[in-house]
Length: 214
Image (tube, rainbow, N blue to C red; front, side):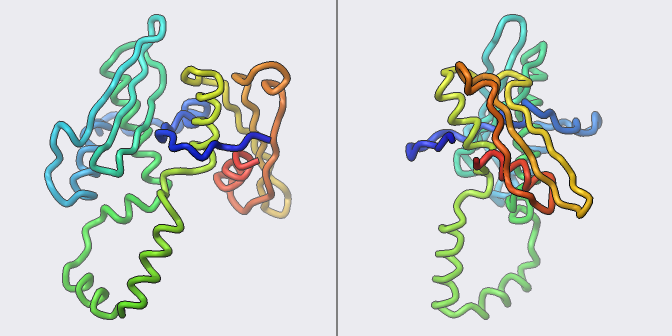
């Protein structure tokens, strides 16, 4: 069983490289969409230092990492593509997908000022302290078992993961439950052929996260 080290590792959504999500609509530029999200999240115009892209070349392909200093310094890696422009768009897509699976998009939605004010006035100091403690306990919603697993594997193999090196397979039972297994072919020796199975969960997404925790 693999366990993530205690040291802080930049969050890179490379698990999504193994199972590519559905592409964003062609009429919507992912980088523009990411800029709009950051503006809503920060409630101010974003600057060049808020969103930065770093592109690396592997053979004849490119992979970009986007860093969001305006959103807790999160980093997300895109797929390997044929040019630098598409690489940056792919990285932006991964960030948007990660936020859609967390609570950050809801936090970025505009809130009616009157409703927000009324809600805040109802909180006592004790309730506010409990709410803050709960948020600290939950931690960063973008950090999931799948992202931690991929960060750990990258540290072991000392390189970025390639497409198909992290494989999740999910089995759906007649009663409606889902159970997933994960296989990481990038690992050395017999570890590359091993499979880890998670618990039975009520959704496919939770089943994959459970397998990553194993």
